[in-house]
Length: 133
Image (cartoon, rainbow, N blue to C red; front, side, top):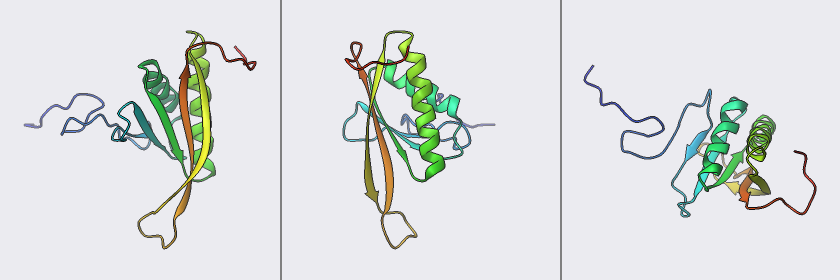
């Protein structure tokens, strides 16, 4: 109906962004490091789609950062990582995860809230520590 067709995975202004909170995680591609994709994971995210999106970006050679606030969101982030890792290991692509906390201001709250951040990176070879294949 006169609407401009937007390529899948992009906003009208051409940014790489997927925002379907009931399925895929909210993905931001605006970090200072253009090789880093930031996922804002919620408890409502679909684990399969989250894992598949992680695997897609890792396979492209990009680093992925998952940001989760709350137990449900952390659970979905970990399950997404597990799905992506199990999928990629079949192609001899190995993931490593660095976990840390970050305090961020949230509109409407007087105090900063703490996010759990999972930074995922691709390894070029099998890690020295044992992993399940």
